[in-house]
Structure formats: structure tokens, C-alpha cells
Image 1: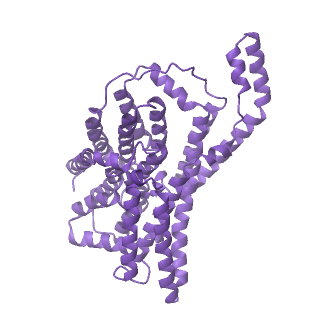
Image 2: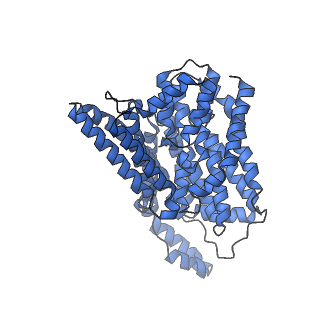
Image 3: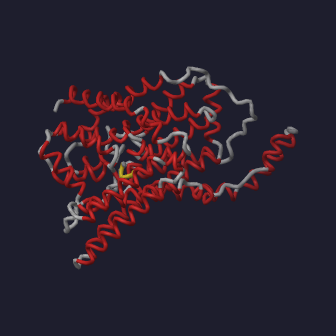
Length: 472
């Protein structure tokens, strides 16, 4: 699931050792069988979350702990406890980068929401006279475009926040728009090394040069547009009903925080592209921008209030005076606390569980069987289908580790299918998982599954487009 999402980033260099099989063969052992069974059961509980009302983090935390306890027992009995510890620490490092990256992104989103930026955007879109169908296309196109150079997880979360603010009472539209946003964000990340972790891995391995990725632009557009056109027919083309509530202006500092967010994303890109460091370094560096901005807002608040209070008094603006009396100072830690912690814990469970299965040898076993028995084109299409269920980063790493004899267009096909294949299921990408948590059940696994046929048509159409334009 988009390494779960380190995909969330513009490219956190994943720790390759985490997916390498250990020295003890466990794929045909009782331990391996138990691990696969409990992993499957945990995923079934995740899928049934909306019916069981059991948070998705609980079953995956259990299965992650169970798999690594079994690995610890087996390896300690053979005097190889250190090898298991090293593998666990590699996976934990991947999650630590993921956790910190997402925590910064979620903090910025929460801060922008608290400062009223999304509410202001909602009012702007209402005043523009957009219909629901227009909003559907605007958020989809923005998700596609932004995720090509930023990270698709954060992009999807931003677009979802806009949809939920503008169409707060239309649950059907929110769910449809979220499906569209997930597909658009995943598609937009396929034609740039900074759009997805897997494209970064392929680029770093030297299989595809930087500029060669851009031939995937048209297949990516096809992948987004085909299901979007189908879904748009199921949206009422009615104008967005303007709210008659009194709209409060954005709170002080909203624009500054938005600029800091853009600078944070730019810093994450620069950290990797110029200095070869993980983008999480840039994100944590960017958190300091927010903290210093918050410090400035708090320190300058009294003088700012005095000036506004004097102006409101002179103009006899009673509503402005009332708003000034209810001003709450900006607190960065309250925004950190509002992060989707269940989603972050879910990511931990998936990263560690999939890493454990990879250490047992299952991911390498599956990948080897596919490339030995199938033609590269069919095998690479299967990579995309697997990425809808299993984290695509260890799958792609397994392909890179095997190093099958393929030309550049086949490696581009891997980049395309691994990137967009996760859209087939809501749990197949970081964006889908995050939006399920963000919408609190409105957009769900079951609802996304209803439209998998349309998304599948886009998946097939994008592959055909690539094969026709770029060859095999």
C-alpha cells in the first residue's frame, strides 16, 4: 500500500533491506502459513471496518506484532537473533520516516483548517457558481496536477478537505469525489520520480532516466479521465447551494501558514534532489517554519488585537469587536494532537506486517514466480494488481532485486502499473487509506469497491495507451 505510503512523500528512499528474505526459509513452514493466515484475517477485518465499527489499526497492530514475535522466536532458536533485529529495525526506520512525514503534513492541514483557509475557499467556490460536477472536476484535476511534483497523500487530503467543506451535507457526492481524488492523485504521481516512491526507486536504480518518465503523462491522464468521466454521470449537475450563515474571515496567519506549507514541500524536494537526503528531513525542517510562525503570531497578537479593536471601535463594528473577543491564539501542538492517529497506527501495522512477510520470503517468492513463468508485459501488469492489495514498494523492490532483462518501456510499465494499480481498492494506496480516516466512514472500502470496475477500465486503458505510444 504505497509503502504505505512513504508514498506519502515525494520520495522517501525506502530501506531496501527491509524486503529481502532472511537466511531461514519460512515460506513452507508452519510459521509462514500462520503469518499468511493471520495477515489475511486482519485484512478482512480492515475491509469490514464500516460494518464492525472496529478501528482499522487494531487488527493490523496485532498481526504485525504476531509476525515479528514468530520471527524473533525462530531466529533466536537458530542463534540468529541479531539478523531478525536488524530486519525489524530496517522496517521500523521506514515507518519512522513515514510517521514523521505524515505528522508534519497532517499538522499543516489541521493548522490551515483551524485558521479558516478551507472555509474561505468554500465560500470562494460557492460564489463562483460551480456545480457539484464542476467541483468534482476541479478537485480531480488539482489532485492530478499537484501530486506530480508534491506528494499524492497530502494532495489528496487537501482536496478531500475542500470537498468536505464545500459539500458538507452531501454524503454521496463526498464519497464519489473521494474516489475521483484517489484515482487522480495516484495517476498524477506516476510520470515523475518525485510523484511516488516506486518511481523514485526505479529512477535511482538507473533503469529509467529522469526525463524518460514524462512519456507516461498521457497514459496517466487516461487513467484519471476514464473513470472520472464515468463517475461524473452519477453526479447531479446542480449548483452548490450557498450557505446563508455568517462567514467569518480567515484567522490571522492563515496565508502565512499556507506559504510555509509550500516552502516545506519545496524543502522536502530539495533535501532529496540536491542533497540526497530523505524528504522527511525537509518536512521536519519545515515544521520549524510553522513553529516559528506560531511563535510570531502569539508574540504579536496583543498589539494586533489593539490595532483592530481601535479600528472596530472607531467604525462602531460590533460584530468585529465580538470576533476579537473570541480570538484563540495559535497553538501548533493542538494541531499535532488532531492528527489521524488511528491511520498512523494502521500504517505502522501494515509496514511492519508486510516487511515481516517479505523477510520470510513471500514477496520474493511471488515476484520470482511471476517473472519466470510469464512474459514481462503480463508480469508487470500483475505488479499493478498486486499493489492494490499489498504494499507496492516491497513488490517493486523485489522486481528490482531480481533485475529481469527488460527494456526501458517495460520498466516504465512497472512504474505506471505500480503507481495506478493501488487505485483499484481504497486500501491500495496511501491516499485511499488516509481519506477513509479523514471522511470518517463516508468514503469507505465498500463504496470504493462499487466503482472498481470503472477504475479498472482506466487501468486497462492507460496500459494500452502506454503500449501503443511507447511500445513494449
